[in-house]
Length: 478
Image 1 (cartoon, rainbow, N blue to C red):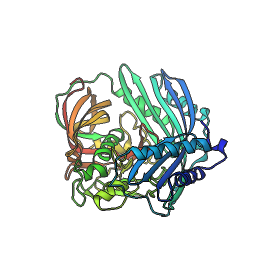
Image 2: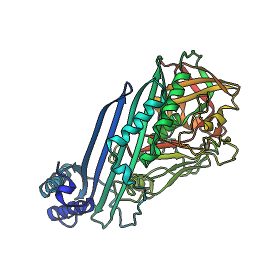
Image 3: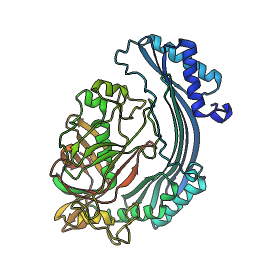
Image 4: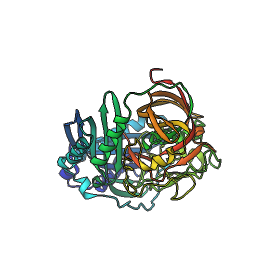
C-alpha cells in the first residue's frame, strides 16, 4: 500500500486530486465526490489473564462516487499515488457506464461550513503498546486471580472530503476502549468503557467491576418465563440504543414505511430523550454533510430520524449528516446514540454515592453487584430482575421493532431492593419501543456510560434504566 506520507500529500490534497481526475476523464459535467481517510488502529488482546496478541495497522482508503449521464457508481481503493488514483477513477467511470439510470440521484452536498469537534488527543493517537498493556495488567491484577480476557484498543482517524460542487472538509479524531471479562466457575462478569482519551480508561476500576459481577453470578437458579420488572445496566441499554438506531431511526427504513418512528408523536416515556452526538467522530459524513447533534426523541416525543441525501430527498427534507457506505442499501444510521440521564435530584434519578460520583464506570458498591447509580434504581424494586447485558439480538418485526435475544454476563433476582440470587440466562422477545413507551420507565440513572461498538468510531451511551416490564420467554437454550 502506498501511504499519504510516501506520496507527500494530505488527505484533502488526495480528495481534490480525485475530483480533478474525474473532470479530466469524463468532462466538467460529471459530478464527483471523494473521501480519503487514514485510520490507525492498535489492539491489545488478552486471554487466560495474559496478553496473547498486539496488533497495529495504518491504512488509507479512498472512496469515490460519480454521477455521469444520469448514472451513479462508487469505487474504492488504498493506493494514493498518481497511477493508483487514475486507476480508481477509470474503473469507477467504467462502472457508471454499466449501471442503470439513477432518477433518484439527490445531487452533491453544496458548500457549507464544517467545524472540527476539537477532541483529538495526541497521547491516544500515538499510544504505545505499553500504554495499552498497562491497562490490561491493571485489569488482570484487579480481578484477584479470576480468569480474565478482553481487549484494549486505541484508534486515530484523519479524513478529508471534496466534491465537484465546491464542498471540502477535513477533521481528526481519537478513540480508546476497553472490554474485559472475568470468569469463575462458568460465571462471567463484564465491564466495558469507551472514551475519546486513553487516560480516561481505568483498567483497575473495570477489573474490580467485572470480578464482583462474576463472583456474584455463581450458582444461578432457574426462574419461570414471564414478564418481570427490570433494571438494565448500561451494557444492556446499549443494545436497546443500537437496535433503535439501526431499525427505527434509519431514514431509509422510515421512507419505506418499515420503521416504527412517527415524528411528532409521543411514542416513548417522558423520561426518554435520545440524541445522536457526533462528538468524537469525524465532523462530516461520507457525503461531506456537516455532522451536528440530532435530537431523535425529546421528553418522550419522537422528533426526527437520521437521513443521508438520498433518504432526505425521498422524505422531502434535508440530510442530517448520516451518509454511510451502506446508505443506499441499509440506510443511514445514527451510530453515536446517547440516552440522556436523569437530572440531578430529578424524579427519575436516584442519589449517587459521593464517594463514587465522577467515576465513569460507577464504581462497585462494596458487597454488591451494582454501582451506586444502579443501586438507586434497584432499591425501590419489590421483586424483579437486574440484567447486565444482552446479546445475539435479532429483529422479528421491524414495524413494531420486536426483538428476540439472550441475556448474558449476569442476571440477578431482586427482592425488596436487594439482588439476592443469580439467575440463569433467559431468552426474551420484546418490542423495544413498547418497553420504553409512555408510563413504562420507572427510573433512569444520572450517569450515562459510553459502551464501545464492535466498530471503533461508533458507540452507545446510556445510564442504567428501570422498566416496568420485560418479556422473558424461556431459558437460554430455547
